[in-house]
Image (cartoon, rainbow, N blue to C red; front, side):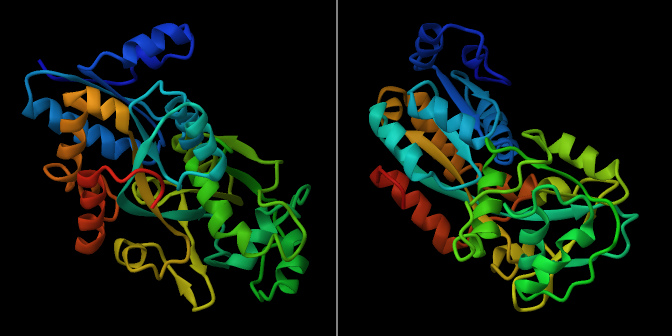
Length: 324
C-alpha cells in the first residue's frame, strides 16, 4: 500500500550515515527533505500520491533549505524542497558528491514582515528601514528608533517608534533567511562595504511557528516568515513594504505579479540518478507537476503562471540538469 511518513526514520540524524544511504537506495521509498516553507506543499502532494497508488512510500521532512541541501548533495535524499535558489557553494557540494539535479520551480511565495498588533505606530516599512533594523550594521540596536539615522541616510523618512525591538526570525539554515538576505540586505550591503547577512543578535529558529509565537509574545516585536504561514496566524500584524513604488501589502495577487517587493520562487530539486533507478520517484515528480499542482493554491501559496508551469514541466520532461 502506498503511504506517507513524516518524518522519515531513514533521515534521522542519529542513524549512521551508511544506514541512511541504504534506506535512500530503497527504490520503493522516496525521501523528501528541506524547506519548512515548501513542506506543506510536498505533504499535500504526497498524500494525494498515496491515495492514488497502491505501492511506494513517500517521506516528507522540513528541517530547512540549507540542511536539506547538505543531505541532498551528499546523495542521502531524493528531493530537496527549497525556498531559495541553490547557491554556488551548494552546487559545488553537489558536484563533489556526484549528484546531478533538475531544478523545478513549483510555486511563488512572499516573505511577510511582521510585528505585534499592539505596535500601532508601524504599518509600512521601506527596504531601507528593514536593512537598518536587521541588517549587518544594526547589531546591538535595542529600540526601533535606534535604526532611524541609518534608515534616513539610506533615503527613508519612516517614523520609527521609540520602543524596544524584539527581533525573531529564521536561522541561517532557512531558505526564508537566504531569500530575505537576497531581496533586502543585498540592496544595500555591498555599497556600504558590509557582508550580505543579517544582524546576529536576534532569536533565530527554523520553526515558523516559534517565530510567530515570538512575534505574538512581544508588543513591539519584529520578525519575518513566509506569507503562507503568516496569513493564517493569529496575534501578529503583517506590514506593508515599500520597495520604491509605494506601500504594498502581500497578497496572492501582489506576490503573483511581483509588485510586492519581497517575493520569491519556491523549488524542488530532484536527484536525476535516483529518478532513473526509482520508478516511484519518477512517478511522484510527474504527479507533483501534473495531477497535484493545484496543491500549491490549496495550502495557501501562489501558483505559477501557465507559462512558468509549462517551463517547469519541460525541464523535467527533458531532465535538464543544473540551475535554470
